[in-house]
Image (cartoon, rainbow, N blue to C red):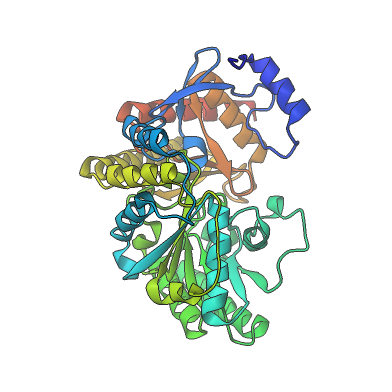
Length: 439
């Protein structure tokens, strides 16, 4: 029997009736009802085209419905849709081999595949505890690491902390956010030195000087596109290692070329002991993974672990193809060129629009922080929603948001064109003008 098709109104009513009211949605007064997607574009049920400047929450890397990725996945589905890791199959071996070749910063690695990024975080922390013998795990404030127990415990954003108590021996320390949190009288070097001193005090006072791991997003995505300096990350690694801990780089958002390098941590002296990954890894297919140094991975020898959907051959074929496409010179060049175009154009908008407080980011991972007043830097949350709505309805552009609800997140697929960037900038320019005039 062919499933019936629903109208946009029927979908909205059905969500309200049959789905748990836990799902967030953008544009609640007039939701986007997606019919199909291709490349950098999404099309709604009425046939309207949108530039997807948020890449399905930073999940679409090489493009919606990329023909090469689909071909690899469909070919595997015709042979075997699911093979448990209790049996052998070549697909996860080939995917792991391809990924390991991109991680020269870690030396020899071994990988474990999962179904999601949050599952990857859970396993990485589990492995860190086994390797070190400590249970103390730290994360940075404003971070997002997932929604299961350990990953939610490590997530340090107020909107997501609504179901305590959380896992014991998890602690949050302040991370770099110079634009909003640097005390007056400090420069950035003094501010980061202060943060690192607090990190060391926290390790001493919470874990008796023994640490399992610190998990860090090289660039905080949901937190508002935040990151530190070379000095900050270099000293962070040194402190964590001095107290016996491991550095886990959460590259669920920053991995797979998003920032202009294969891995976001490569922008800084931040060589991780383990690396989480997901999102762009599957280009829309649900898949995640953890890469660990071989000596760290050895801590799991003789112990059991199992992921029902982890390493399934369909996802693995897609991952291998994504690695191939991201590794091409033209893909890398487009990420860098379009990212530079975005930053240049957004800088020009900042000169004309007082709502823009700061523009920051690398590659195709960019944040635009909106403020009501550049002196007080008051959060412009309502205005951010208005800008997003205007871009959607009048500019044909879909944006995301993060931080305190006032940071526009611009993270399009890697196949984005120069004309698409111009469409994004034009939509933002018009939306900012309209919102500023109304205020």
